[in-house]
Length: 352
Image 1: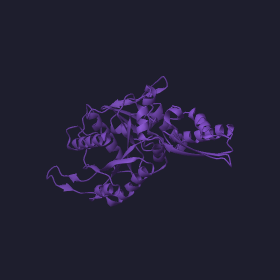
Image 2: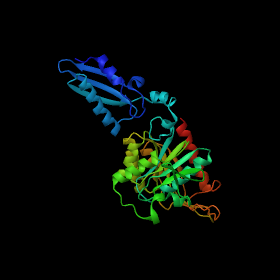
Image 3: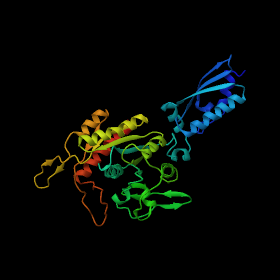
Image 4: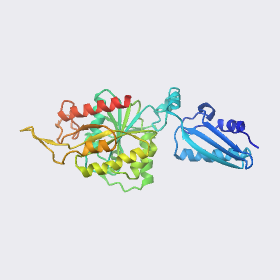
């Protein structure tokens, strides 16, 4: 008959699949109970990240080794290690662990930009918010994760291609932001006709095979809606903050609420709501015309119990032939200043 001490000693030699530390080091085995009459062993195990393929593999390994040690049947429950425990290991992490973006030990903060539907300006918000964060002195990366509707390279006026060296992809840097996009790997703006599993591999490459270097924030321009790609990204990331983009129209806000609900269901925090195309301001009279109605952004923020980070008017950036980036507002442009204010709000919220 196997006893509790033996169970703890056996499991203590296993490693957390994400921290690469033994269970003995992480105090992973939080509870052991044994029903002697049935020779049934129940264990509760804390790991860095639950509900993953790695957890399933670990579960099978635990069952195997406990049965080899004499248990007739095995029951397992998993929970996540507390943030305090993860933080203690983050301080001891190796350089490779810190730079593995999907590791719970990574210090990079993910900010996903989402919307309930297309056409609300989500990509415009993504690129301008990324540039604004860079203007505040932050080290910023941007993944164009809208695989079917990639547009970030064009919006930022990027002409170069990523460099591949020693099986690592080096992102293109533009206006202080490191950028990677499916658009770099598709010839002549060809349509993407891949299925979900292939796209999942591409996204995994964007996280694991791109040499992001030392960055503070990694922004993700998500596909609109709540489809497979958005769900895959939510499940890949160890943790993520989310910004929901909507227009003032009540229907757009209603649809955007689904994207917010998806973030909450996958345990990702909502940083706030950005209302795009909030009004059109006449250059001659200065009067505001509310082309798409009013109230969508504040209503959505209230419904999701989060902050309205800002409202962006309709308008075109000032174009420069010398530094052409068709969707980027300059720092001294009125809308560029709004983005700077929103970026500062994001920095302050993430610092708490």
